[in-house]
Length: 230
Image 1 (cartoon, rainbow, N blue to C red):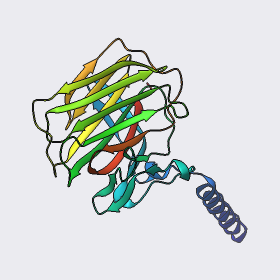
Image 2: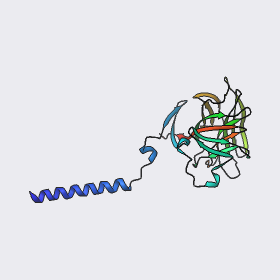
Image 3: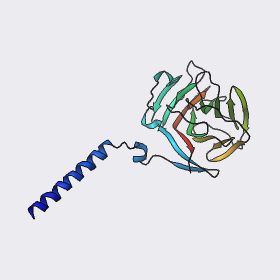
Image 4: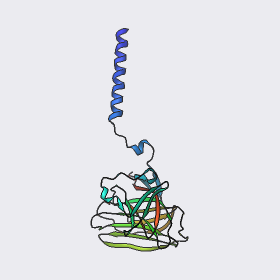
């Protein structure tokens, strides 16, 4: 009886030790562990979040500090505040590389600005910038802009005419996607632009970022999605 009890206790200790080692050594994606990853369905397409950063929690980690951004950049309780300062624009990069089919999302509002201030969500291949796509909203107007450039050729470079006016101190959720040869732009979950028959970049994108031109804006977060694999 004593021998059996000792054997059981030994097995129990061994099991606990193995379980402890497994939990210690197994790497768990912290976003998955904390339930932060999202799946969203947009126009009947299921997107899986692959990168997310909330600027209310601070700056994103970056393995390349010189590419952190430029202009005047500061943190507020509501997010990251960008202003061009003495630069062409105020800009902050997301340290993430993504494929040539993607959806990006942010929430932004203008402060202390007037027309022609513009806030944009963009992505590009870096380096000489052969491939770049951008979607922006223009303050004090009923206009937005969209661009899709591949191999230094603009397939789209257009003004979007909205049915409402972009106003200061109001939050706008922007979604911008390229998938299945199609560009789509959304404001507050409403489709405002769609064009098909476009060509994808031949490379991955290394510089997703947020930018503001001719004014000041606060961006609450940035999220990047890819189509969920079935």
